[in-house]
Image (cartoon, rainbow, N blue to C red):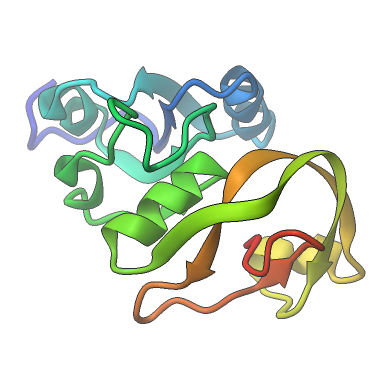
Length: 161
């Protein structure tokens, strides 16, 4: 498929940062009747471009954005001109790359947590009353990048969505 040919279907690409849930994310997208493929975070730009994604999901992962040698956010992921959803580590990478501040949390959030929706949007409409979620991270976003707004929080994460 050339870069200018029309894809046979709309594609969501999940970028894998090592989350134990990356395959589950792909499956859930497919269950919504949307074609989805997963690629590693360090896949060449040409591999992503060939998929012609309509959106990109950055998975979580076990690293801190400050770990030496931790997976990074390649510039070509944001250069696609499509919506990008970051989950956990993916959200922290986005915040850091776009001018926000990520820092170590005073307490690691691991296991069951209550997500409190502060600003119901289309993305969180079904969770307007909050939701029980699974968290596993030691970092948290302290300041959002310019142009972003917080949608939800948990007891340990002032910006959880």
